[in-house]
Image (cartoon, rainbow, N blue to C red; front, side):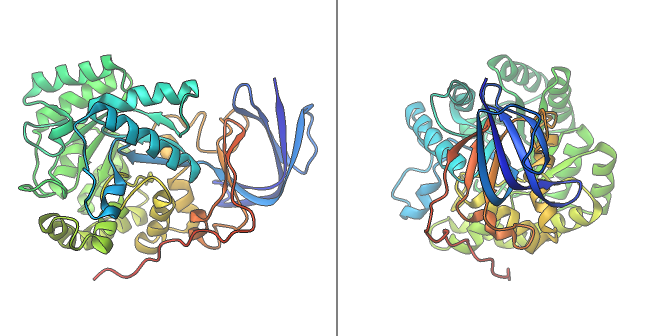
Length: 418
């Protein structure tokens, strides 16, 4: 057993909504867990190593509840010269490994992947657990569920009718997924449909929820238009992804069902800012029609106290696995009215709760895994500093060191929509 005492740190406390100064963290690198958190530098534990963190601000590692690790975000920065989605299992695996490395180097220590061609995220999770690849820990969903020809159908399960849905969900769980992802409505990046299209019937979505919950699995709904969101909430989905358009009745339903929203605001905003002449016109038009509604809906949800779990839809145009997660948090502050502390909570304790892993993740407390990030600046004062280079720790070991005596990478600036 190796114990490290990280001293002289300011630790984020979600109950205080602030950083607590003059703290120490003792980690056991064999178990990967925190064994002690307390004031000052002293500890009752006998430690093998003491590391002075020099007053850095430490918060739990960033958790991203909506990623697609087999997608190729670099496609959009190279003027379409790369194939966005390869049909090859081998190429998809290569892109997933690269995206995993990018994520951990930018402070993302846990992801929930909500759709992967060939169920690749299941194998990627095993590789990460064995230490064969570098990257965040993974909650898997395997292939997402779509109606025949529906949203995301190219790389997912195509199922129609209650019996096919039930059998498909059972098969996915047999394959080893942790979560079920279902495309309840249409979306932006498929032509011939809109976010308001409802693609599964109430009976089909209830069957999926029943099967997932029967086995203790979570289930996420891609649901964008208001009617589709209501259908998903009524069926009992744990999380609603995107939620472009919700009204007061939907918010009331969400409170009754304890539903969590995963907003993925940057998925729309990145297309809006950067997608002209590269993203197809039919997709960008849908963004322009829906983006104001989307931001207004998430603002209403925040004001109403609906839990928000941070997710980016990483892998969509101009929306990758680097600082986009931290930038998503900035959007929550600047476009949805969150405080910086609420934005931090969305990417830590709220994600952990939504993923049903809050007994071991989402807070820096004894008994939790020692996944955290350390910064020289206080994100409560300026949420954008999380986008700067930072030290990243996983299971108590530093896996990425911030560059010394170099300027931090310039964060994206948010301009007004309109």
